[in-house]
Amino acid sequence: MAKDTLNILWTNADPVTSELMVLMYAKASAMRGWWKRVRVIVWGATAKLVAENETIRDLVREAQREGVEFSACEACADRLGVKKALQDLDVEVILWGYPLTELLRDEETLITV
Image 1: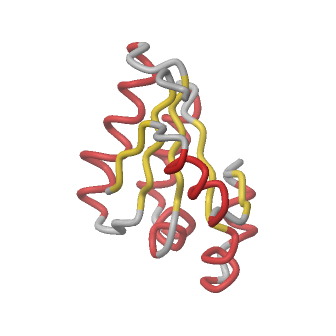
Image 2 (image 1 turned 90 degrees about the horizontal axis):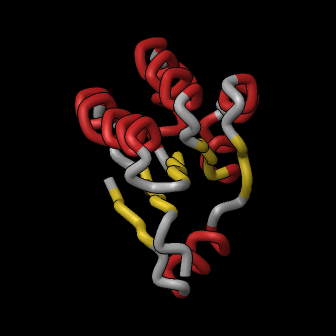
């Protein structure tokens, strides 16, 4: 179990929640060393939000500069037509079903928003 890794499963595409919870906490966690590793998993409608909302894209870039990792669900990105836009933002795009299952089985730290 990696108790020093924070995983944030980001499924809420509300821009305010995205900015003032997900991205704010992820960035602060990395900047302040609250967690050794911070990973945000972009799933569902958030893939489209990240790909198309310039404010959110800027906040993702800021978080990345602080060391936050971003990874997106490939099936979602494909269905929403935003895979290339996410990759251009240096967001890893993979099939997340099995890895998420493993995170849950291994009882890793996971926040779902």
